[in-house]
Length: 51
Image (tube, rainbow, N blue to C red; front, side):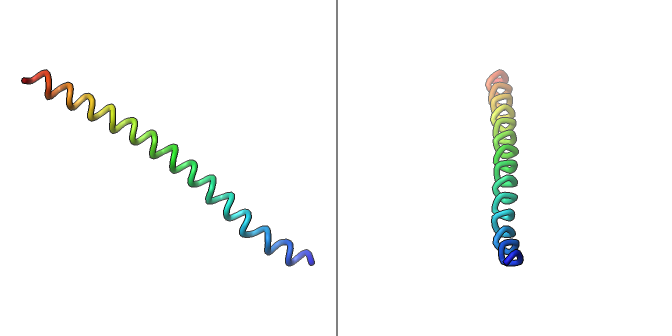
């Protein structure tokens, strides 16, 4: 009985780990997007000042 209970916990733990990794990747993607927007704003401002 304990062996079957252990086998049912493995997928639950894997889902929790994947959920945590997914949230971590989402946070990193949001940080990357914010940096990209800032870089594009600086690029646009630089090009606008040259004209």
